[in-house]
Length: 221
Image (cartoon, rainbow, N blue to C red; front, side, top):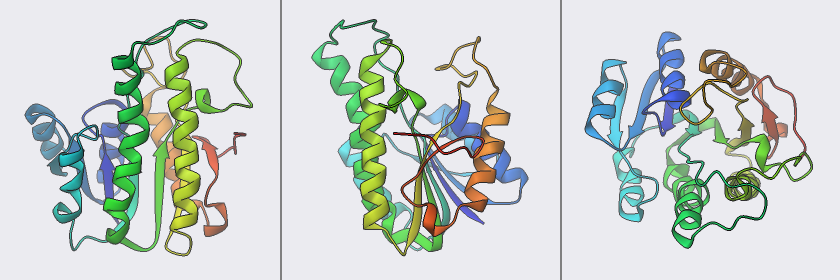
C-alpha cells in the first residue's frame, strides 16, 4: 500500500504515519520544518517539505510525487485559529490564516495529487463535527467552524470531479488528545487513527462524498 499524508509533523498526522508503517505501507509524508522532517524519516517515511498555506510550496508537490500511485491520500494539515466565543469577530489576519490553511490548502492540494492516484484510491480530508451546520450547538471558535463547513463542501466537489477515479470522504477524527484538542479530549490519537484506517479500508465508491465519524458512523452536514 502506498500512502500520502499531508501534515504529518505531530498529533493525528504523525499517528497515521506510525500506524500505516506498522502495517507495512510505503509512506510519503509532509511537514514544514527540518526537525519534523527528520522525525518523519526516523519513522520510515519519505519526508517532503511542504507548507499548505504557501502557493509556491504547494505547486511543487505534483513534480515531487510524479510517478507515484497513491492508494490512500490524507489531507490533515489544519489550524484552529482564534478561540473566540459568540459573535467576537476575528481580525483579518486571523481569518485569513485559518481559511488559507483549512480551505484554500485542500483546494490547491487536490489538483496536485489527482494525477498520482492509484486505481480505486481513497482520499480523506480531515474535517470536524464543528463544521456540521446540522450539529452546531455552540459558539466557540466560529472561524474554525466556518472553515470546516467550507472544507466539507470542497470535499463534495472533489468527490464529483474525481468520480470513477477515487473515493473522496471527510472525517471527524473525534475529540482527540493532541496539541489542538487539549489534554481533556475524549480519545487518544491511536484510537482515532485506528478507526479512520478501518473506514478507509472498507469504504466503497458509493460512499464518495460522505462525512464520517472516526468510528464509521455517517455524520449529517
